[in-house]
Image 1 (tube, rainbow, N blue to C red):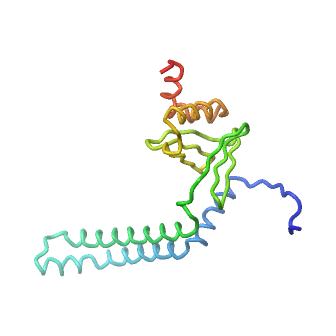
Image 2 (cartoon, rainbow, N blue to C red):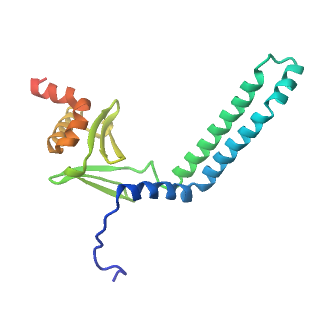
Image 3 (cartoon, rainbow, N blue to C red):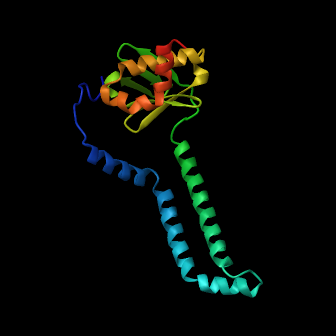
Length: 191
């Protein structure tokens, strides 16, 4: 028997979800955010010593103004390093290389791996887009890419795009039409 043997029903307003996103980001990636804050503070402090750095560089034969480029280069290199560290932390939280399964049924689309499953009901699909390497379906700010390599042919992918589009609500169709119009036109023309 499970601890919770009933279904819970609740509503979270968008404002609360936004606040939750910031809060969870600070908790999950606090060290990365602290490192970024300290790095920016160190850069601002270094800017206070820029005239000294500039003078030292000019004394060793560097051209005037080189201090700015040296400080900016060090700052940008640090930002890149901190971003790479943050990306590694994010990648460690889930298996992004897991094999995904995609299935359509009468009620919507199912996207699953061995660890997680999403079911997008037709009314919940916010947009469909085409990328150079596949089909993208979104729900809110979640985007799911189904690569072209998953389909038997481009024709199969295009047929699925048309079928998904036919099941979208009016607002989702408005958001999607600019991205899938060529597929809809080619089908109407019988190309």
